[in-house]
Image (cartoon, rainbow, N blue to C red; front, side):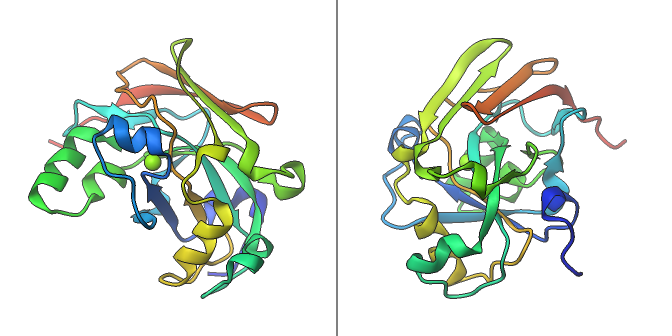
Length: 222
Ligand code: MG
């Protein structure tokens, strides 16, 4: 596949790389240890959903959590990227929600299974419009927030990341070649909680972007 318009990366980007436990207070609220190196997982591009379409709760979960995150959009292919050159591979950002079926994740963790059902379901990656990096001179000083039905649930700053953006880009590229249009989900601050059918999620990067998504339940195949 050839690269398309970076401003619509969700239509043609080939992978979404998630980073878990990148904010200490979030790791602690789920009783997880602070990681010594980034914890990685994948979502497929079919997880993307855009404003105007609902976030759909999968039939097998009763505890889908919101996780508001800074998304990093890759603009230049690279492998084994040194930290000093990492930002040259970043085209921009997006506000993202890493929707997580926490009950499925707990089952996977207790059984030593991969997190696919917890993280990769359809509509598990709502994304804002693309934000060119020129509009974000300090990605390490962004205030992220999320409200459910008008109630503030998450409020954090990207300065609280354990592994900042250049570290993540470099680290991931040692294992997986980063390609134009790829998205990195950089982890969530504390305050995650379950969402329900007909909830309204509003989230933003202060002063830069706001998104709104309705929540619905996905009908089960018969
Ligand atoms: Mg997350």
